[in-house]
Length: 463
Image (cartoon, rainbow, N blue to C red; front, top):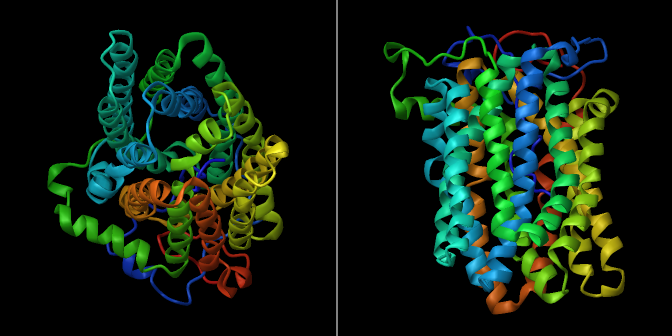
């Protein structure tokens, strides 16, 4: 099951707030009585199946998603099986992969708002290709060590910061505002299809090519992303003229004020950050739990979690419809409950190992469904209410918090795993996942009614 992360994803963000919205808009959103824009059944967005620009972008990201899913199987196998990594070392590895969000997450948003987002993503793809290709080269020359994996994870993580901030900020320039939820749903559906096929393919490739060799396929996915981005034409994506660029610190401050001055975004950030903290504890120790303690093979691991990702696909496809049926803001706490409650199923596997496979399938299906429902709705909401010139800083400010907790959690999980054992830490993480739902369970989300989705500007319309 994937992590909410920031997205919880949904992973894509799209906005079409007025490009002319004032830079001081963060102050506008802070009113406690403000209610969010909401999707209504009356909106009839144009079909994205005829949008050649979006289809090109979508195809490249699909290839990259498939490759990244393969690495999610291959990299832990390299660490645990080939290099005999301990609990503490797995904590270091996971922390290295996400540390950049904590270290450069805030300035990355300000920089991305100044640069061409498409070219930023292309540069990040090239960096990821080179870094991942180093692993098989080092392995087949007999020189691969754990510290090499740490460096590769850190470099890829740094590239991910800039790619992801630009990715979540470019979609509003690709599609009309009414099509944002549809675009996010399609992008996340593709990610979930990759989640279904990728782990199984990854497990098979690990057996065929070895884990390091399988990572070359991921590098190929990023090459496909680069080519697709090179063929994608995005309007209004040129770098901001130097004369129009605000100073770095005031630019960062505006993004932070926009996010934390809005009561809706504050609660979304809190739920996502708490969820990511405890889910990172789970995923740091999960390879050890399944591969070492339960004796799963890489192929078995890939098939189980690939099948579990079907829930994510269903969640991504249904999220726009659920938002229309129950209301956009009500769908957010529903999604949170859907990924928080099933978290306790994972440590239960140790109590009933004879039915480990069906329990893991249920855990993966239900949790991934909730994460994708939550992500698609909240990311679309964020993108639609944020002024165009604040998109990068909004996404970076949120990711600084919700991804910044992850390296801390990974290190803590490694230490606790070595001190308490893997299973007690999984129980702690399950309790934390349930607690993460609390910030968005308040009456504010349940009472929110339909509002005008076409209202221009950065401030949410009142109900």
